[in-house]
Image (cartoon, rainbow, N blue to C red):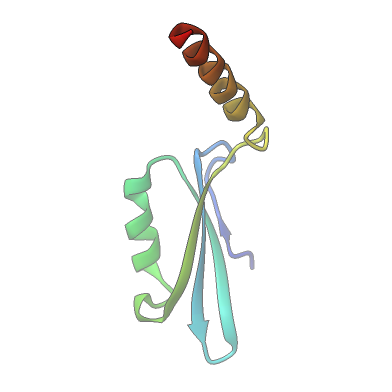
Length: 83
């Protein structure tokens, strides 16, 4: 049984949730489109009261390279506009 819950591989967000248990940490991975979905996934369990950590990241296939290029291009445009 896998602890990865996904209906579509192209969801925008990836949440890795860790819960404490008698056998150590249980890690579950959820893929979601909207952040508002996260609370229901975490409430589903295994047990809200044993939540240890939740790590939320953009589920990007390019490793964030495109976002960095766009950000750098915007910085160049701003510096040129202020010159």
